[in-house]
Image 1 (cartoon, rainbow, N blue to C red):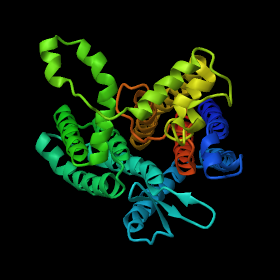
Image 2: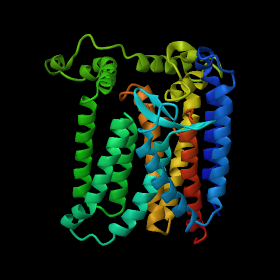
Image 3: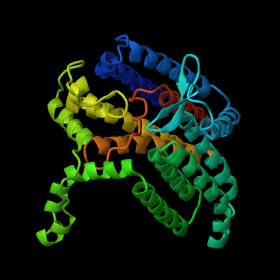
Image 4: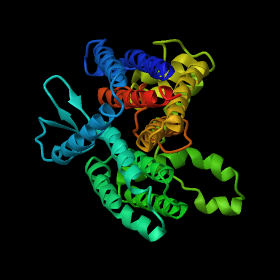
Length: 386
C-alpha cells in the first residue's frame, strides 16, 4: 500500500497554498483589476489537478509508470526548453528579459519546473547503471564527463537564457548529493562542490541584478555580521551607500507584525503594495504576518513530515533507482523551502524560488505533485515487501 501519511500531508500543504493565493493576492488583484477570486480559482484548479495526478500515479505499477513519466518529463520538457527561446512573444512569455513560460490558449507552463522532476529520474536511472562498477577515480571522472556536458548545457539554458540561477543551483545540489548516494567518491564530491561554488560566483559577478541582490542583502546584514569582528577587521568590509534592502526589510517587518498569533487571515499589511505578488516568492512572509509564528511552525512541521516520509521511503526502497529518485525529490523540495525561508528572514540574499505547494503557480504545484505521486508509487515497493 502507498504511504498515506505523505499523501495526506502533501494535500494539506496544497490546500494551505490555495488559501494563501486568495488571502495574499489582494494588491495584485486590485492593481490589474482582476476578479477577486482570480488567483484563488487558478490555484484551486491546479491544486485539484495536482492531487488527482498524485493519486492516480500512486496507484500505478512502480516498475512501469515511474519510468515512463520520468523519461517523458526529461525529454519532452528538455525539448521545450530548447525551442522556447525561438518562439515569438505571443507564444513564450518573458520575465526580466528572459523567456520562462510557454503560453497556451487557457494556461501557461514553465518547462523547467517539470524538467526538474524528469532530470531527477534520469540521474537516478543513469547513476544506478553507471556507478555500481566504479573502481578508481580515473574511471569515475571518465564516467562523469557526459554528465558534466549535460550540466553545462543546462546552465546555459536555465541560468543564462532563462536568467534563473536558483533553479540551476537546485539541480546542481541534487546532482552532487545523488552522485554521492549512488557511490561516488568523496574526492569527486568535493571537487564538484568546489566547481559549483566557482561557477555560481562567476554567474553572480557577471550579472548586474544578481550583484544588486547581494548588495541589498549585505546592506541589512553587515551591521550584525561585522559587529562580531574586531573593528580593525570590520572596517575594510563595511560598505556605505548600499541600495535599500526593500524586499528583505518588508519581509522582516511582516514577520515582526505577525508576532506569535498573527494579524488574522486577510488582515496582513505586506500585501498592500509594500511587496508585489506576495502570494508567489514571498508567501512565507505573508503567512508569518497573517498566521504568526504558530502558523509558520505548523507550515514548517507539515513540510518536515513530507521530507521525512520521502527520505524514509528512499531508505526502505529495494531498488537503487527508486532510492536515488526519492533522495533527489527530497533534496529539491527541502532546499526550495530552506532557500526561500533563509531569504525572507535575511540570512541569505532573496532568490526567486517558489516554496513547493505554498507559493502560487500552477506549473510548480503540478510538477511537485507529480514528483510526490511517483514517490508514493515507489513506496509500494517497500511496504509490499515488508
